[in-house]
Image: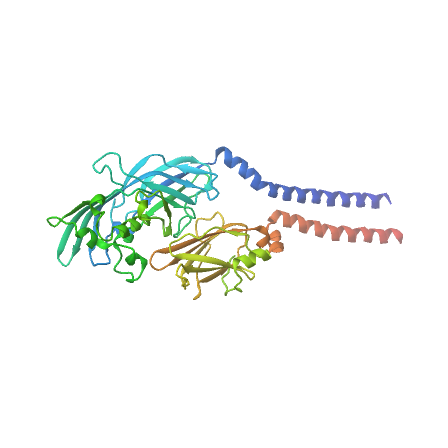
Length: 276
Length: 158
């Protein structure tokens, strides 16, 4: 009888031990995310790289809607305070200051231009990005927000151009980057990037797109600028373009330059807002 | 794992939201000349269209799971611009729909735990190998211990 009681006690003790072990394992597993979150705030930070991209249109050139083969030597944009932020707006990272970027930098296969980086960023999904184009306060192109320098060729005619634009605006891509990947996803100990993308085909059009595509119906083409050529050279500032037919179309095209990949940005604070 | 299937029934978001089915929230559309509406019918379904009303037909779609920088699934919209998928975890799912001419649309869909169809399976999958082993050992010991107990009892009563 005593023997039977002993076996029973042993049996109950073992079942109890198993239950305790199982409970412990389950509890440990459930606590993992909480522990991970606690350590992330202490020592697991990442970094954010801000890039600017004129895409192949700028690096490789293109044929505009009127048949001009356009290539760029330089394409400067004056970026101010690019700011990336989470969708709820709770966290943001600012690359302070003014950044003059040449979107034509590098060869035809060059990567997007690095504008700057911010270290020690707490992990988060910085999917949204806001950036301003403002007039440069100094330098050779003071007063300009965008400077396009290059050559346009058509039917044996080669026209060097320098086009200085002073339109100011703020682009805001709240919904995030549209492309092959998710950008701005900062993880502990890793670097993520966010990209300001500029679609200059919106200004010139694209002979490869249908005529009724918005790229062509909403652009001015190089003919618009060629009308201001002197001695075979276009060297023009926005102020001189004001009275030309198509000026409003040009301004609206500039307001649609800013993208995150293929994702459109909302535009605000335009200096030519009277043309809304 | 996600899967792509045919189009669901086409209730509009307002009707579906009122009925409390499937999706909790969707952030606004992002893209020039594009718009979307969320459909219902057992899976997450989205119909993408240009602002002219024309569907973004047979457009490439990348679907990103929450917290992932690479796509979980690549598919295309059908001729009506519809794409469907079955999220297997809560969080913000991202759909990127791209059409010809540089149009791009990104949709950020907030998926809630209650919207996941595989609750029981997910709970089982959440157990570790050690937990499963311990559970199996408990079961075996239970049967063995009970058998030994009754065997011993029979012997004693003889």
